Amino acid sequence: MDYFAGDPVEVVRRCIDTGDVRDVEIMGMVCSWLAFGNRNQIHGKCDFAYHLMNGGRPYEYLLSGEWRKYAGSKECFYRMHRFGDFYDLCERLSEVYSRYQSMEDALIGCTSGVEMIERLEAMLHHVGGIPKDAKSACKRLALFARWMVRRDGKVDIGVWQRISPSLLLMPLDVHVVKVAREEGLLLRANADMKACIELTERCRMENPDDPTIMDYALFAKDISK
Image 1 (cartoon, rainbow, N blue to C red):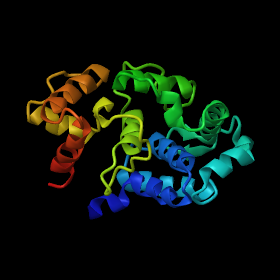
Image 2 (image 1 turned 60 degrees about the horizontal axis):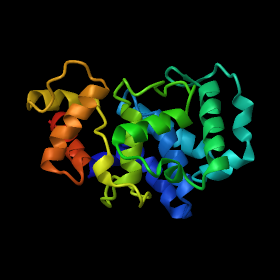
Image 3 (image 1 turned 180 degrees about the vertical axis):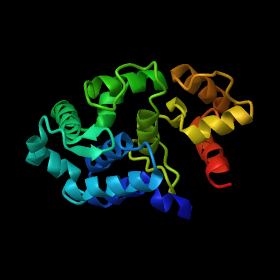
Image 4 (image 1 turned 90 degrees about the horizontal axis):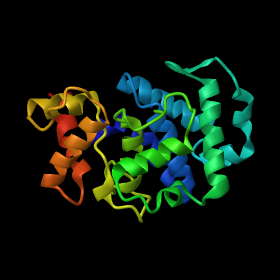
């Protein structure tokens, strides 16, 4: 598990100590939004965001409105993400918390993983880097949901108690896709939502109550050769 010391979820886990689920949710959403590219760079930028957002109290940061100074900014935040995109993300999250006590509350009633992803997309509409529909694999939103729902005491945090792990979709990381195809678990050529559902259903045959637990085996087989 030392491998996960450099994973973006390590930054999210730091927020557990505040005792406010909203801190974990916000940090989780920001870190999943940044979760593409080189792993060390992702972790470094997540650490930057952690300190930017009140050093582990991102909900206070959201309430402060400090992020409003980045409206329309073209300055690079991370790769193609701009500070203006970070502003958009904070604005959407502020809207969510003006209506709900938590992001989990906004997802209660979802009967499938796709519906849950679609609701997340709708909440975060027009944020750069967030898919506009559920045709793509929506890897980062699936990853965020896994962090929030699964509780293993090692990686996933599990601050959401009312959503079943059985609803989760597999985050289609490039390593997961590669190994899943090598093992004959994924036949679809495109790494899109249909592929995500195909792989999740195959994993559900092995673990009906917790299909995304297989994410670790697939991911680790390629990354830890």
